[in-house]
Length: 152
Image (cartoon, rainbow, N blue to C red; front, side, top):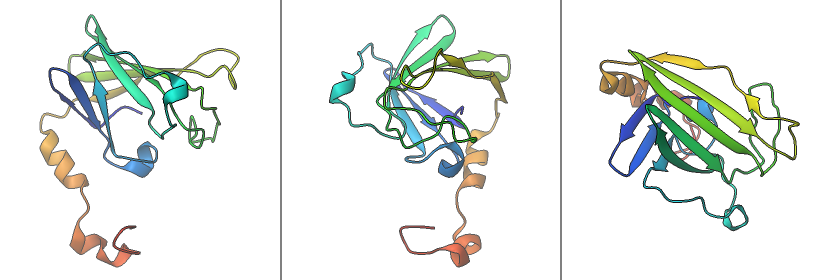
């Protein structure tokens, strides 16, 4: 799904996800180069939960092209499987105070044609640091739920 926060620098974007379990497994962030590089050849990538993302701008729309996934995740909460040949193209654009996100999913091993997900619209937060601080774990509140120091 769409990121909770986006950080932009001249040569990359960082997508931050508030809750890793709600947004997929793995790291709660993605670093997306926007410096014009090409993808690593698929056969040279070790599949990961979030794949290898490369971004570029088409007018006012950010296009994020991602390959190199493992085949352990699902396409939707319903458990739709995919292969390691999964290819995802995300399009993000701003319309006033809304961020509009849409993804197109291609997988020639599983899908007969590309699957275009319904657009998701998120309101822009005027104070993102406050939201991020509220989403971080609270040691006092979460202490009784810790299983080990590494897993909670």
